[in-house]
Length: 437
Image (cartoon, rainbow, N blue to C red; front, side):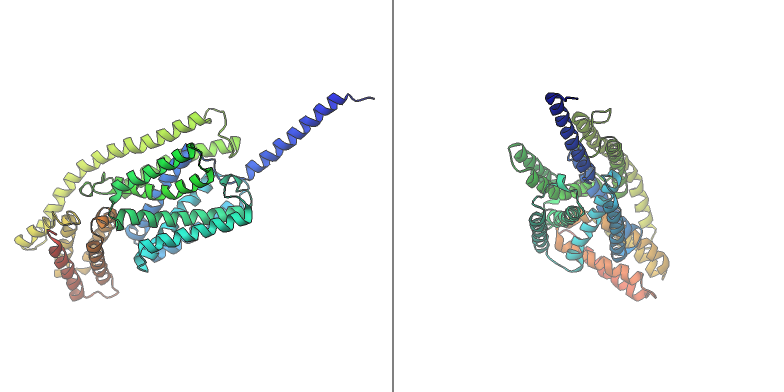
């Protein structure tokens, strides 16, 4: 039987096309990082804030302390990365869990350098920049590319996550340098880092390297997310919307869950390389989902801010009554309630009110209840750090050290009334010293 050459040639072409298509599909499913879309960037920014606030919640609110929290988060990250490396395709919920955990650990690494080892933010920023450059240099030398679309082997994935961890540490250090050491504040931080990301996008549109602009934007989203989180959580006295860390985290987490769930559905249908043409897919729909996520944060955040402000009026009245009943002399109580309205750090009266109550309990040798009440001081001070510290880092560190001394004295294995009273007196003296300056 004769075979038509043209027909045979056609079958050959179709066979080669199918082989190429199968190869592309296999490569697509081996790629274990998401497509870079609008929803990718929204989830990335929101996950940054979740990572930072959750670590603080465990260390301060739950009371695990920084050492236990650091060890716990590192262990959980290792386990999550083991699961990520063992998967054979992009799985959104696993991937984004790793990103959140990397955000936590990256932040903790920077805090370890800055707060525990006393390394300057200038030095730590430069150090992490050098480490990131080394990671990229070795990655490129070994693989010949830094594109995340090529992350389809275990070694490339290892380079990828090493780079991600370093970008979070660098972003944290650079963000803290800008908003704290340079005293720009978180409001300016949102504008500055948001503007830099916009400039990076415009550079990409003008023909700049996709790989270069991606990694620049990835570093910048870390301080942008932190500044945005601070803008929502900080008290209105410090320029924030006063949502509080818990409400902000829940809001961001809800938006992340919705967007990641959509990613999970799309990944199951179409893989990672495309968004698909189904009812949830397509570039326009992706922009719509990303816009809806941002709108939810802004609208719900604004609404919850007004509700929280109304609730705070009642709480402030209760706090004033509580201070009046501490047994402290009228003149001293009045001075402490109204203390420091013009200090460089802002109005510190709410901290002074708690200190009054702790002092009253210590004076009665009620150290057990004083220890319980001082927890409120620790949480409130930690929550207000982003609003206070950029205004005068020197004064903030001095008060922070003295608050730590109070906490240490009350939490000692066998606390001494005289030691507790002495540390509280020193803290009160410093607050009075800062009054008006």
